[in-house]
Amino acid sequence: MQKRSFEHLSRRERQIMNVIYRLGEALVSDVRDNIPDPPSYSAVRALLVLLESKGHLKHRKVGRAYLYKPVVSRDKTRHSALKQLMHTFFDGSAENVMAALLGSSVKLSEDELEKIERLIKQKREGKENESV
Image (cartoon, rainbow, N blue to C red; front, side, top):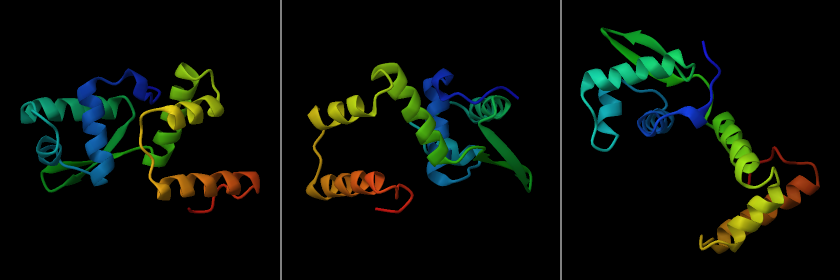
């Protein structure tokens, strides 16, 4: 099994992983129903097998079909992707990430800003695992 790295996935492979993360687990037909301009059933099945060989998915048999689910949780994947993004584009600096987010054209609601403030406060107090 190869090392799981999302930076080397194709656009279609990322679409498939996004669908499976959103659904929790999925059949080939579920994936086809949830991606834009889907390829054939056999092409989706081949991509699922490829993603499994890369270590991103595992499957279990349900009747005659395979039900695919992620090997790594969505939260762990998010943290890994954020770490890679931060390293690649922001010199490994969380401050640079926040400055880019707050200085961008992304509109944050008052609720989102309050949640960010609470997260910062929790981090300062050493309570980063509490929910917002």
